[in-house]
Image 1 (cartoon, rainbow, N blue to C red):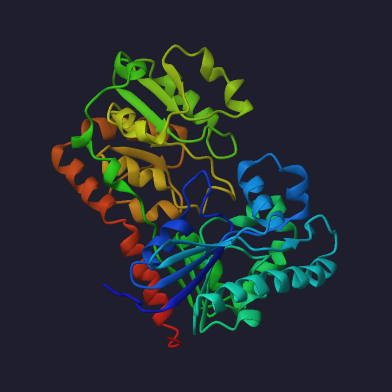
Image 2: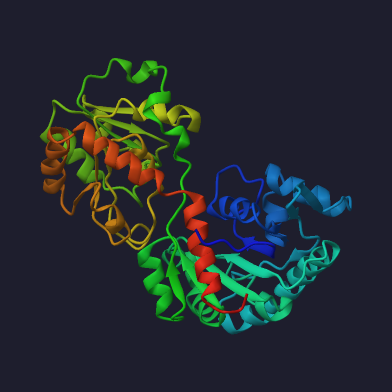
Length: 400
């Protein structure tokens, strides 16, 4: 397995170390820190966030560190530190002109880079690697300003599908990709997009904490699913119209009233107002604590990921598929380029009619041998393996 060791690595990105949800960036940094020293840089405050989100605990914590001049460089363990930048950036995404945005953004980058350099000097970081998790605005100039030994841009979502990022990002992100030393992506779709701007773009896969999704560790059945009759066709995740095909789910429930469709996760307004709530064989179980999810998944006869195809979903790596497979569950999902790596272990369909046929097939073919194959494949998707691919990409530049 490829390893880069005894280096200093600065990690910047969109998600903070102390965020409420997990993040690829943090998982990767933890893996980096097993063999290297890591400075994890939390996002700096901007003026609008201070004004609008002062009651948000994460923002309040940063305001407190900033205003009371508390120590903003905190040691997490022997090889990892996190930085809360002591600067306030201008909020500029509202600017209609990308030309003007770039001018002020360079000033923001200078403030941000100064804070990072100060922390790097305090830790005696030398000849360091800069790992940028999709921070296309605040970190646009860090390669020039910090002069790292190697600059890597990591893409894990199709950011251009979101209007906020597209407004100026459709110009800045390709430029940042082009000038970075190497690009890594967690889906083949995003890697192909990056290759249009930088030939040194690589697919590095995705890690998943599959340890919790172990059928043998399940010791109880949640009461709200215990008496739902099978076969149970289930989905776990956010129930948002932007990502899921409402009509497809309704088609499954109407076509097969003998199946129980179980949906676990928070609903947007479209789901709350949908006809699904009127169907006797559709069960909305609501948002669950992440520690409870394996026990619910254990009761599924078939797991589904009924994505709707759009710019948001087409390139994203579906982490839930690893979780489904880690418990050996037969899985039916919408066919996308990102799903191609799962084609030998899942049933992939394009239409609502496909889903009915494939779910029936999944129920009929669910042998112990197939279950073990799914589990083995899912468990190969570790952060250790993904970061090994990131290391390979780093070493391919001949800059280390």
